[in-house]
Every structure is written in structure tokens, then in C-alpha cells.
Length: 124
Image 1 (cartoon, rainbow, N blue to C red):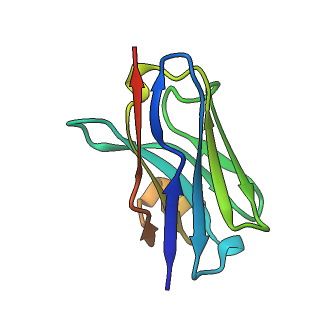
Image 2 (cartoon, helix red, strand yellow; image 1 turned 120 degrees about the vertical axis):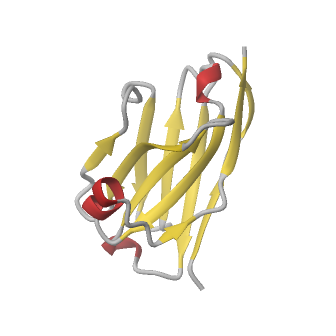
Image 3 (cartoon, rainbow, N blue to C red; image 1 turned 60 degrees about the horizontal axis):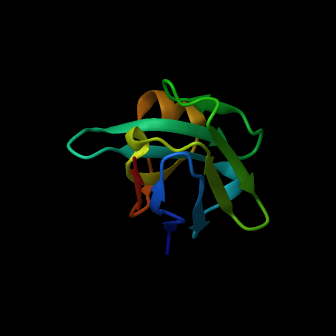
């Protein structure tokens, strides 16, 4: 069974940090690209960052570089999203998604698998 399970969300004060995890199972993790997406309240889901697991190439969404770091632990089939200096506008549900290439994930939007999301609330 294919699964993407996000965790690590929660309520945090502005200026704080979180590390979100996306644990993958049921598919060949090394052959995929994994991305993080955010859906703010009342808004469409938007890209945050994507990574090709094999060569670690990354694509970044608009205005997210600097405070966001993506990394993968291939031994654990897990991708992490570290966010520092959290701001209220970072509030939303964070989803991870998998596609068979970074191009498919990021450019074409051909996502094969989605996680259920983890909620991040940043209070001011």
C-alpha cells in the first residue's frame, strides 16, 4: 500500500521553528521526486519546494527560500521540511506529494501520490 504520511505540524508562535516530516512507503522512494505544498485558509494549494530524491535537485516556490530547508533521509524514506522564523502567513495545511520526476511534480503537476496533510498554525 502506498502511503505518504506527514507529521510535525502544530501551533507555534511567530518566530518559532518547525520540522515537518513526510514518511513514504509502498513505492520506490529513490526513483521519485517529493514536494511540499501549502494550502492557506481559503486559498488554493501552492508549491513550497520539491526535491528529486536521486540527485537532490530542488525547485523552490515563490518567496520561500531562506526560511525553508528541504532534506531527505533515504535510509528512512523520509523528506523533511524545516521552517524557521515562522510567520502568520505560513499558516496552512502542508501536504507532501510524490511524482516520478521533478518535472512532472513541479511543472506538469502530475502528482501520483498525496499525503493527508499536517496543519501548521502560526500565532502572532
